Length: 201
Image (tube, rainbow, N blue to C red):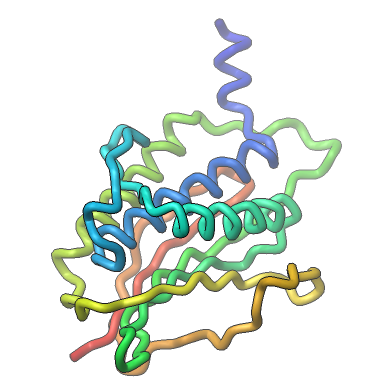
């Protein structure tokens, strides 16, 4: 039992990458649902982090997110991700209305280093707090127009190779914006800080 507990509390690079990638998946799904970017009937409930979270059933969106997260996971393993940004844009005016920013700090372990330790429950509680804040965001964020679209931007170190299907993008900043900083979580290898910026007026 003690051996099992120790293993569960040990944080490996692969384990940390899996935790962060999964967090991004559920966070993106939650944001797209809460902000009404996709119709509510295209989401179903799943139990995760001690919460009921809505995830997309739209096959096209699932395929897109799977492809992005698969590549993101590879870059997390090598410490090349600086941030993930979800941008929500007005379909008609093309104005950027919201930027959900997940800043990633990476402290890659050395091969000779002893396994880092952090209770899995503690990490899950930190993530749960962020998901709760995303769910509560509808209480302070302005109503969005009925027709919105979204983009995912991944900021990486400059010297990495980028898949052919990926495109360079401008930062898509918001003019006249307000910022709200949300909670953060850390696995001891990856630390993720969360913030949302939204357009005023």
